[in-house]
Amino acid sequence: GETDDPATPDASPADKHYDVAVGSFHNGMFEDAKLQLDRALRADPDHADSYYLQGVLLLNEARTLVDAVESQQCLVDEAASLQRQRAQQLHAQAREAFATAASRYPEGAAGRGRANNSLAVVSLFFQENEAAIEHSRAALEQRFYADRYSALANLGWAYYNLGDLVSATNELRQAVLLNPDFCVGRYRLAQVYLDSGLPEQALEQAKAVVDDPRCPIQDAHRIAGVASLRLGDEQTAREAFGSCVTLAPRSCLAQDCRRFLGSEPSAADAIAQGPP
Image (tube, rainbow, N blue to C red; front, side, top):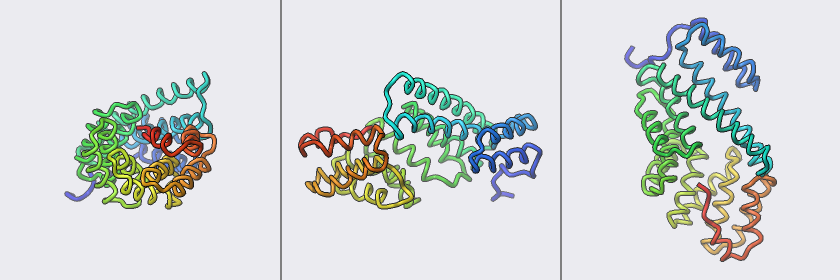
């Protein structure tokens, strides 16, 4: 009827393959999941959910690669640059899968919202902020899309990257209001506050992330450190930079946090501009 999400007909052969794929995905059996999705799309070439999950698998693979050269270690050699290229290819393939999914879902469906929001994630990765704004807005327009906080956070981050701190603050505040446990939204809001010259608010948001064991966001520790420095609290700053290093000692971010630990407060403040 009127209140049902339009994307839920009775289970078809494609649905059955898709359901198995979801199970495999959650159990870390990614190759099996891909195989099942191929079968689902052979059974139904318009199966929106399968295109969407294909995109998720590709993004997942790309993140693993980026993680290996930026978080587990900080590598800038030729092998690492090949890894980064491969991650870009995977993001481009994911974009195709999400775009196809978005076009196959009915207007207003939750799935169309998710697919549009995932397109925003890919756009942010490629630093295509205008496109990210468009995709986030498209997600928010879908009547049955429930994860609005996620699209608002992507919208806010795109505005931040474009230097529009007012719009960024507005969207990210809404995201955190809708979902107070949303680590990424709080972390991004902290960065926006920091760049807006509001270190107290930045510290408050960063601390909420740092103190939550469900939020392993290393960069939030850097923001907490920088905000504390700006508030003249060197002790708290050192603790934050220290925990930033401890979280992933060989990451690129840990190198940044070590620079803070080894420098004079004034020098530290000079390099306290966060990465976008």
